[in-house]
Image (tube, rainbow, N blue to C red; front, side, top):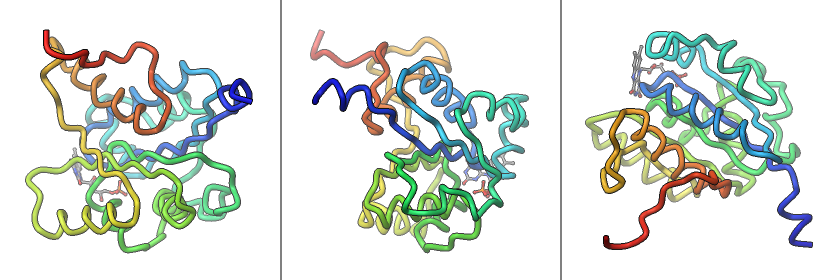
Length: 196
Ligand SMILES: Cc1cc2nc3c(=O)[nH]c(=O)nc-3n(C[C@H](O)[C@H](O)[C@H](O)COP(=O)(O)O)c2cc1C
């Protein structure tokens, strides 16, 4: 039985929005692609495409090549828009304040927001890697409301106890923590083993 559970394909929706930090979404998709038994379902917003190109010179098509399946953000008739789709969770990485606020308000005006709403209503895992600073009270209240609804707010805040040497090390750490939250730990995750 445990073998069966370990082998079962996990279906994860990955949303990429127009917040800064497209590299987090890119690296997460790369790491999920390396893992067996994972299916990724990618939705990238128009602003997400724009920011990714500005920050990384990567196109939407480059991102789509890393995913198992991809969907136009306007395709509100997609299978991801329905609670009947068998999906294990969703991560929005990076998550803009715009998308976060729409998710909190249940304004399902595009497929990414609807798919996140479905996760909440079906009581499935929803992780939002919200990237903005500083945060005003409205942002903080929205995050509180989402946490009360069951979402996990996981901003990509760097840690330094693992002594990162490069920006890539910092990105890797946040992505590995997000994979832990999805229940799909990366085999090479560096972990704090206690006091040296
Ligand atoms: C280069 C660039 C960086 C941005 N960084 C952020 C950010 O860190 N956080 C944020 O909430 N919005 C950021 N924005 C603004 C969002 O892209 C904008 O609010 C957009 O409407 C979000 O739409 P979406 O949620 O559909 O992707 C940035 C925009 C650009 C062009």
